[in-house]
Amino acid sequence: MDQIGHMPASDTASAQSPAHTPRGDGRDKTAWRSGAALAALGVAAGALALAARPGIRGAGRMPPDFAPAEKTLAWASPAVLGTSPLRRFYAGTNIEHAVTVEDLRAMAHRRLPGFVLEYLEAGGEDEAALARNIAALAEWRFLHRSLVDVSHRDASTVLFGRKTTIPVIVAPTGLNELFWPHSDLRLAEAAAEIGIPFAQSTMSNDGMDRVARVPGLRYWWQLYVFGPPGVRETLIERARNAGCEALIVTVDAQIYGNREWHKRTTAGPKSLSWSSKFDALMHPRWFARGILTHGMPRFENVIEFVPKDRRGFFDSAHWIRSQMDRKLSWDTIARIRERWPRKLVIKGLLNVEDIARAAEIGADAVAISNHGGRQLDWAVAPLDLLPAARQAVGDRIAIFVDGGFRRGTDVIKALALGADAVLAGRAVLYGVAAAGKDGAKRALDILREEILRDLGLLGVRSIAELNPRLLVYSDHAKRGPRSLA
Image (cartoon, rainbow, N blue to C red; front, side, top):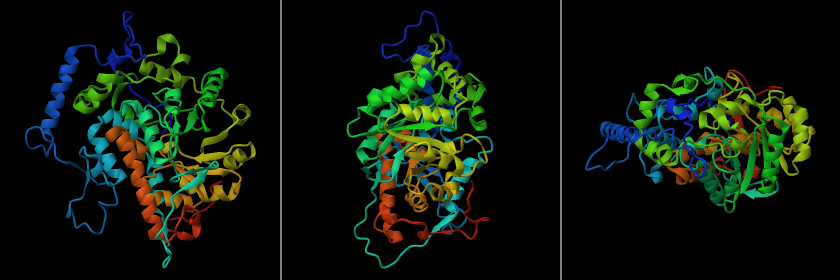
């Protein structure tokens, strides 16, 4: 999820008037505020949209609403006879009513316009890699232990010599301002309150220094290698000065995946389709709180490297994508290792030989990842590779893994198979898109609650007790676990 999205540019957003003067904070508010007529249209369209939605009763009062669960195990449950009982996720506005990450997802789906949802949810091409991430988790079943005293359970673990309350890291994700104003800050604040690391993306929309100063935060920085060497050297030095604990170098996004469904929301490479524009106006809470109030997002940490005539939101995104270093190699990683004195994580590896080489060159950890199913389609799920990866490197380096983790049981499976922690991307983004910092914290609270409960149900008292003997590969799977080197 930490790649620059293929974001369509609106016709009005890409046009920069010579007479236009940016706001003092550098944000361009011209794009969506070209006239009072547009704002009036947005308010009117939003009112019509709210009036048309089911479940609206009383003088403007909105009771809890729900979203369908067709694509989840809940819908396919043997407890359901046809469509009875009717099972739907909560999609209202009271964050305390969200009892699962899928509830937060339903809340986000109700609040966000379609083109933003496609950016959040879409995978590459046929989305086979996206689907595989979920399927891989479903293929492992638990062998719980009985008659174990689980009155006291501990979900904490140690990452890079420091305790973290749960074995979860908030993954680096870009362009989060589309979901909620100052999303990167809100995510960092939620992570700090829970007591876990937050990794900020190169393509984030809040300044590094501001995020790094969040009280109590374990601050990590994710690096994209683009442009001349001076760009990465500058970003590395700034991360060091900001007190960054770990540098994550993403290596699987030098060429971007083909997210076809997202492309279908556009009329061209730099323009939303008319239906997408109208749909945006039909989501007044998102429009008014975000773009109308704060203007278009801005890549605060790298905008200075972009040519002055390309610093509009969409133009800068496309320019940075064009400058990605497609010659990125192990030699580049070795030079980064020499320059970076703290913990180094290489993210985006999906081959056992590469993982072993990362350990040899001095990386402190790897993040096994298929980029949330957004890059090479039909790639294996990170979980498919995990047992062989752990066998290859032993305890020499830490192993993180991502790819569809939305339940406490998902996290427990990964740790039992050899991971030290999981990177949570979409799961936390659903929360921040639903309700800002409170939503992000609710997502992490849900994961913590589920992990603690599921440890007890599994018959183990701590993360340290998890091991492969607590799992069995499903008999329904067509193949068993094997090395994918």
